[in-house]
Length: 450
Image (cartoon, rainbow, N blue to C red):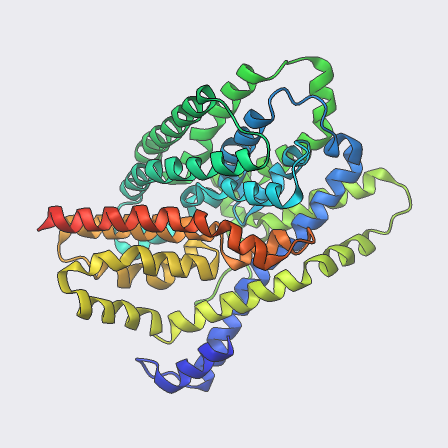
């Protein structure tokens, strides 16, 4: 953050003074507070769910018929569905009870949890994709369709890593399991493409994944009243969370009411919509769970405990987002893209995955990365058709690299007592997969365009 501030004042490509620096830093800090609030709310919510359902229920190993199938279903179905509904990494929180039941090492469970972020272009009702469409002048449904097409090779690449991680963790599968998971990846991509094109990317993620979750449940679980009753204490808070956010985002009258109640302290900065923000509902539902126990626990003490557990991660989030805001506001991001265009000429599209991924990695939010960089990225495309591909690659690259951003790593590893450096190293292959695949796609687009 300090180095970024010095460079922006000394050599930004546009006029950028101390007041501009302060304004950008404040905008980034405000955005960091909004993201950090989800972390603190998530810790508070998770503890409330654990205590209300009984830690033995969450931590036990009983009832899991197939650990490998449970891991896949949690990572690529339940987790991605929750992420599409809420965003901000809540998908990782939602699947932590399932992964905890599999008797994995905590570090292995944390790494597996990152696969829940594999559909970030549709996270938080496709907020990042909608921002990308706005800044690229590409139709949102078209951008969603093309993003779904690029998601398939990424899912297949991540599946290879999933197989390797689960094998080392002692829950390897059979060739039948691998074939079955490949079919699920194809079904996810095809469903995302269909719903993005015909209904828009905002609802495509949940509409595509929900039927697959139901199918997986019917195929793998021994459904009984007793099992459903045992799962209900853990499931219903997440159902309430998703339902609240879905209603206020999809019902026109409720959405209008939610948008009218907004907090925007900085012009051009992030806007806080309390009724649309996951942190509001994480705290509200978590508070209801704590109060329902009536065992003398002071609610304020629990909130302070969540703040204490997440303070280091929140500081990291604020600093990274402040740095990204300064890079964008000072023109450094656009200047980098322009410099790459001067170097590569008509082949500058080859740099889009790297730049898009870099900003997704730093900001942990595809909406922020697209807002800061999309206009500069599509300017690298030499003509019409490649503009669409530039926007798609930027959108998918930025979203994919949020998966393993330092913000996300800090979000899960700090509160879990795991070494952040070790988790960062273990998640690097998850970042290399999309970078390699999308760079190959960009090269192919350049070759065909010529």
